[in-house]
Image: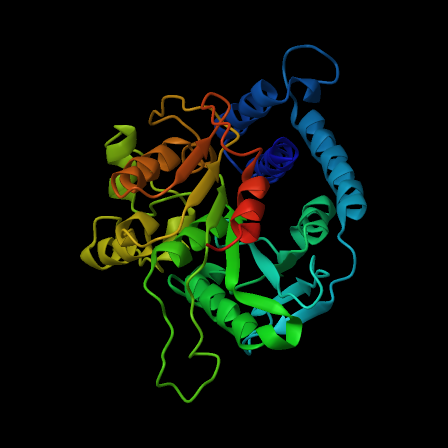
Length: 362
């Protein structure tokens, strides 16, 4: 299951690399370097087999990939949600889809799994969830939600908007739990990349419930039973990335500019940005009463250098291992799985979430 999801992420990454790197206006040296990178990752793109990837071959490769992705998306499109595009705010991106499961036991409430999409806080959509994943949870008597949140949009909606939106969505669902036959005490979250970071942020942050609020939604808890990640980040602090990878000059990830609404005069070491980075990083908020976590990665725990592509180091298993180290000190379960990191505690991420939701109390 995770392998298929990882392949899908890799394909999207390839498309992004090609689409964003073959601009004819770019210096030829830059285009040639990107073509070599694409060829190294995808040798089949070199259709004439001459060992050199031309721009035309790369564009053709991209078009075929896009066609396959479109066909795959149609095949994997989930069944119609029980409730589609439910709004939890005024912005069009403040919406979610909800699939309601049939209770395993007559008269019982259903647990809920919430999926939070990735995309560097700049892209992605709730519609990207695969049919087989939704059905896997529904077959276990677990309801499923896929949510959107406001994207950074060039710095218009920076941190903590995405986190607060996701928390508000969780609260809205809890406020209507009785209507939807959902067990409000049995809710987990998981996501890929940015959605992984949001899931961890929800897992480790203090409860945002305001018992004295006039708003019934705001009175609901934001705590969850467990969190899962696909290529997840336990920090969004470039100073920490550089320290963990041992690369003092590692270039900042491009998504951080909009995520922190950075001005031209600001750097990752600017006090305002540093403060936001610390607050945005899930590991900053870890305490002994936090829930268990499962972190999956599709790349090995390899060495990072100043030359490493940002899409690789930002989804690196070391980010999971660092969180695992911190959580184990607090005796909290944290599973990290990667091609070169084995752990047979659970079949996969989804098995972990299902077991946490279906575990008998007491």
